[in-house]
Length: 249
Image 1: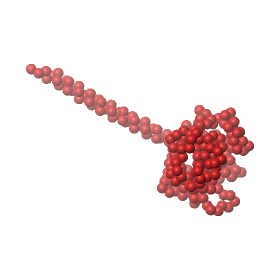
Image 2 (image 1 turned 180 degrees about the horizontal axis):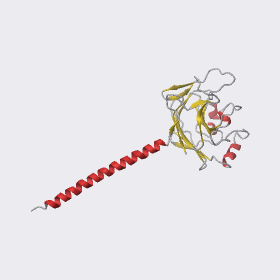
Image 3 (image 1 turned 90 degrees about the vertical axis):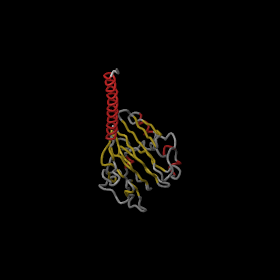
Image 4 (image 1 turned 60 degrees about the vertical axis):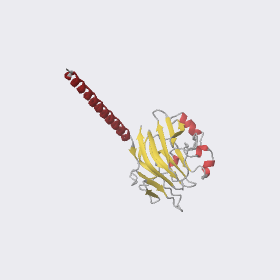
């Protein structure tokens, strides 16, 4: 006579193991999904792709018609003529200190722009670059600044640290740039199109020593404010930015 009891127990054990494996797989999947959502929640979008909410022009209350929103991007159309040197730099409404800033940018033929942080809006200072350090956005081949040394090329900490290599995409294509500024760990970094091209300290004495060797050495307000606004530069050329988000550290 066959051992029906033993066979039945064995079958139940196999089914139980399968169910437990299925449940464990479900739990692991749920944990991975929760972790991914938590990581996503660490980022704050600085541009919704439809409005200029969260931004204004430097020393102004609004955004002029020189900036348009096209296909989910902020696009600068610089005016042909300007009165009294008027500028149309965009700055964030919010101040930041330690952060990872991610965005895509596209520069025009022969174009020049930049991304700054630590920007203070001071009435007597007409430009955000008078306070904020800049990561360069440039057509390296088509703009004269690209021939003024590698510390003036795309991805550079402008006039201070050169990129280790030129990884920019051809004019008209989108580049992805991630800037890290962390005073807690004294780390600054620029990742351009997936490659780390610039690393630098952000605290004194190293930071001040670096500034002292640059064109900004005698600028009273330059890089004096660890906490400040993010700026997108109007340098007189067409440029576009999209997918802008920030993670505070």
